[in-house]
Structures are given as structure tokens and as C-alpha cells.
Amino acid sequence: MSTYKIAVLDGDGIGPEVIKQAIKVMDAIGKKFSHEFDYHFAPVGAVAIDETGDPLPEKTLELCRASDALLFGAIGHPRFDNDPTAKVRPEQGLLRLRKELGLFANLRPVAGYEQLTHLSPLRPERMKGVDMLIVRELTGGIYFGEKGRKDGGNTAYDTCLYTRPEIDRIVRMGFEAAGNRRGKLTLVDKANVMESSRLWREVTRELAGEYPEVELNFMFVDNAAMQLILNPAQFDVVVTSNMFGDILSDASSVLAGSLGLLPSSSVGAKVGMFEPIHGSWPEGAGQNRANPVATILSAAMLLDHLGLVTEGDAIRGAVNATLESGYGTEDLHPKHQVGTDEMGDRIAAAI
Ligand code: IPM
Ligand code: MG
Image (cartoon, rainbow, N blue to C red; front, side, top):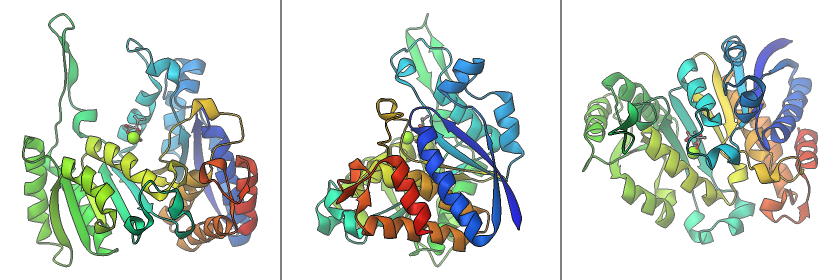
């Protein structure tokens, strides 16, 4: 029996209740495949601010560093969103966590479920064959460049800065992912306007020589936003900078029919972090209404990352089977509507 130490940062809003379902499902996997998952909970986000004044307490970070993987719920609370003067914000916890752990790559797979195509905002024929992976740079760019105010607070700036090594490592990851998938890589940028985008193109073009089996193309981000809606099936792997990836991944996430279905992983260092794409939905917290599937599928990516791919596949199979049998949370308008908890039970039972 192998034991894995899992840091669990369940965070704010619906975070704790969706994480609970993922743990249920991981425990079912542990039982079936003889693994032990040893969970260690720690605060992050608004809860951590309330407890300690810091959205990422030192103890939480230490725990993450000493774990095999990190399962993350959600963070954010409206009382901070509506206060532009707030000095500490829950989101700072997430950004620091990514930076401190060296998680420079955020992988967001987007694929449609056959039985849910009617939920997509796109016509079913446009959803046919949609299966893409967004590879978003996560620890650089405008999120982390110099920012501030001058002129007595009346001028504000955020800098988009990228170094060659930062671009090199993320674009390589894009090429390798494409090589393992359908062999197509699209670099999304704004090279007609931004100097940093021109460096991305330069580095990407140079790397292309090392991956002759991958077909490379370039697309401006405004066009990419349009293409994602017009013809999403054209994309295989999309590699892009931090901010563009943030925006495009939310846009593509609803193609599948619900934001509640899509998982993500943040990797690049020893400890990977796995979390649903959706936010903390404070209005829905504690009501047993949230869809736990995105978090459960994030647990599957966690297992893949630990080298337990059969186990990850078992989770994906159980999710498919459960959705196919018509069960789902309210966002899926299913034949048999169940709450968060029962959805977790059903998927765990399907393992
Ligand atoms: C995401 C989120 C975060 C981001 C926020 C919460 C800081 O939107 O993970 O996509 O912008 O990276
Ligand atoms: Mg986002």
C-alpha cells in the first residue's frame, strides 16, 4: 500500500463542499487500488484572512511544500470585490501560492460531453469534436510585472514583462502536449501591438524546429476569442500568456455546457496543484447545490500527475457513467436532479 500526502486548501464559498466530494471519490479509489491518501487541511483566501490576516499563511505554504500534491477548492468573497481600497485580498493568496511553488503552467482541458451538448450556448454541430487544452502561463506577465500608482494616485500602471526562459519553458510544454494529442499548437498573442508578444513569437518559432511533428500556427487574441465561438473544434493545444489564458479559458469553459464541469492543473514544480476552474460562488455556499464534477475531475488530474493514470481514468469513467445515467446537479438540468453530496456519493459508488 502506497501513501500520498495531500494538502487540501478548500478555501471559500462552495470550496469546502465540492472538495468533500472529491475526497469521497479519492477514498473510493484508494480502497479499490490500495492507496492511502493522507489529507492535511489548511486555510487559504478569505477564511485565512479572517483567521490570520494573511490570505496565504506561512503554515499553509509550508504544508504545501511538504506534500505530494495539492487539492484546491475556490477562493474569493464579494466583500473584497466591492472594496477597491482593500489592502489584503483573497486572490493574493492564490497568486502567491502559484509563484512560491513555481507552478508556471496551468492546464485547462475543454471537451464536450455528448449527453450535455444541449446545454452548450453553441449549436450542437459547432460543439462536434471540441477537445482542446489551454496551456496558460501562470507566474509571469501582467499579473506579476511592476504595478503601482504615481502622480498622487491619479496614474496607475501594470507592466507585462516576460523573459526568454519563462516563455521557453511554457511553450515547450505546449509543444509536448500537442505531440501527445492531435499534433497542433496555436500560440495566441497580440504581436501586432505588444513587444512581449513579439518575443513569444520569436521563441516559439525557434522551438518549432525541435518539434517537427507538431503543426504550429499563430493567432491574435481578439481573433482567438471569436474563433473559440465560431469554430472551437479547430483548436488542439492553445499556449498563451497569463492574462490572455485567464480570459480565454473562462470563455471556453462554458462551451461544454457548465462551468461546473471543468478541472485544471497547475504544474511545473515538484508539487502540483489541482482545482476546478470555477470560482467560490458565495451565494450558493452551504446549500448543497454546487456541481462537484469539476473538483472531482481535478482529483483525477492529481492522480495522473502522481503517475496513477489508471486511477485517474477510473474517476473519469465514473463521472461519465453517472452523467450518462441522467444524474446531475441543477446547473446540468438533468433527468434526475441531485444535490452536491449525492452527486459525490453516486460518482464514488460508480468507482
Ligand atoms: C483563475 C482566477 C484567478 C486568476 C483569480 C482568482 C486571481 O480567475 O484562476 O483563472 O486570475 O488567475
Ligand atoms: Mg480566471
